[in-house]
Image (tube, rainbow, N blue to C red; front, side, top):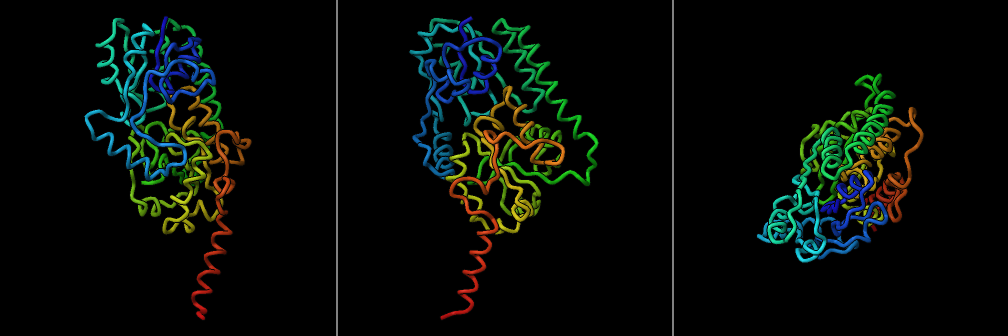
Length: 330
């Protein structure tokens, strides 16, 4: 069964079911060997890791508004791969090549592969996708077993937070972009709920979207997690001032109480595949540290521990000293 995947989460699902994709997207990097397969997609955005989140957002918006779109398919390579199945997505044409682009490419190759689109907006949708993909690539039994295992891990966390009353559930905000500030949607609300928190800025299934900073300040999260889509921890550190230089940052409860965390949004929160369970297992000890062992540092670390980030207390001291110098005059 020659399988091509056009987004990282699909590659992870196919690999977890025991198939090695013969072609992947240019963004696929997990499992580690995935990047060795031919890439059948490419981005029209010329951005390296040093680019700011604001610059990336600007380029994406400008490119998405063109007829060509953000991504392109290497039709010649796709033709050479002779796929039986292509797993793609219809959720976000900014995140990865979408179903319509793939359909156009398939119309120009000799093979007639089955196109399996994914469009998950909840954890249940992701689990359903695993079984649909398993059926398409002749791995139905493996898909059923994987789903059972993932559901057991999810339930293990839910059981430990089910008795937490509303008044003991901290207000949680998760940002999946920082300039502009965007609140993570889709499956995030239910992950936070299962971790024992309150997610008051978005409902399950709601798409991620930009928010006014004043709206986030008014919500005043007690726990804040920074997990930009496509960013690992190092890139979050390089863009930390998107948040730390915003008006009112230091007054947020999460900042004052040192409950701001950075999460590898690229590999975890924003990939609707098996590792969403890892994301929940990392969220739970952040939201309720007294009930769980600390999170995996490969997944998430305290925001103040990022290289180059000035801890909140030191920022406040520096700002106070600066104001005092100005007030004292010459």
